[in-house]
Length: 354
Image (cartoon, rainbow, N blue to C red; front, side, top):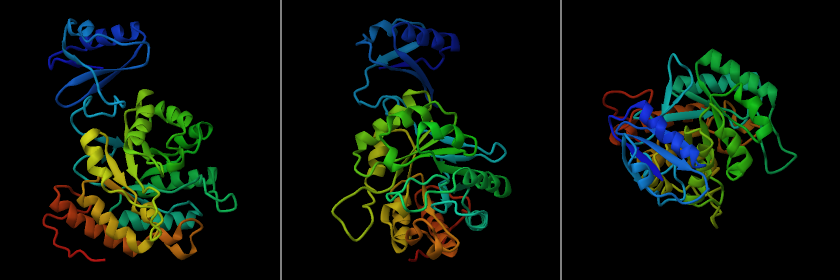
C-alpha cells in the first residue's frame, strides 16, 4: 500500500502517517517526488484497509500496490529517479538528461595501470571510474584482485582525476571496508540474490549499482532491488549485463529489450554493460550504441591501457582510442534521443562507425 499525500500536506501530517504505519507493525518509507510525496508501507503483519489512512489530515488517497515490488514500482513513484553521486563540488547524476558513463579496467592490477586507464577515460569524457579491488572469479586460480591495496589506488584515482569510484563489494563483512573508498557500491551478477549482502548495502549511505543475475527474470531483478530499498536505501541503479542463453557466438546474450520493460515498470535508472554482455571487444561499441538508442541511462564499459596484457577480461576491454571513439558515437546518438553526454556539442554530426 502507498499513502499519497496532498500537495499542501505539512511535514507534521506526513510524520503522523508514518507513526500510524509503525504503530501497526509496518515500516514506513517516505518517498518525495516532484509531483507528490507518498508514504509506502512494507512488512508482513497483515492486510490493511485503505480507509484507515484516508481519513487522516493531509492524505489524498491510499492505494494498494499490485506489483510484488513496492518501492521500486512506478505505482509508488511516477517520475524517474535521478541519483546524485559523490564529488559535492561537481556531482554526477544517473537517470537525468546526461548519460552516465562508467569506464575503467575490470580489475585494479597496479597503480601505473589504473592511473593510465583513469587518465584515458577522463580525457574521453567519462565521469565515473570502475575498477575491481575484489574479484570473485569462476576459477579459484585466476587473479582475485589486490584487495585493500586496490581500494587505496582507487582512492588516489578519485583525488587525482576527480572521478567518482564504482567498485564491487562481495559480502556483508567486506562491505564496511569497501564503503570507505567508493562512491557507488556494486553488487555483481553472482550476488544479485545474495540476500544478506542486499540487506547490508540497503543500510549503506552509498548508492548501489545492482547487476542483473545471469538467469534472472525481470521480476526477480526488481525484487532484488526491492530488498535494498526495503532497508532504506532508495538510491539503486540497475544494470543489464547479459543473460545466459543457448548462443555460442557471444559470452552472454545482452538483453536490450529489458530497458524499455524496466522503464515501464520502475522509476529506477538502468544502465548497460556491453563488455560483460558480449564478452568480445568487437561487439562492445555496436551494442553500446544500441543501448543508448533504446533508452539506457548510461553505460559501464571496460577500458584497459593494454588489454592484451590484462589479468582479467582483456578480451572484452576496449583500448583507450576505441573508448574515445565510443564516446564520440554515443554523444551523437544522445542528441537524437534527447540526452547529452559530458562531451556533448550543440549539433553533433559525427558519422557512426564501427
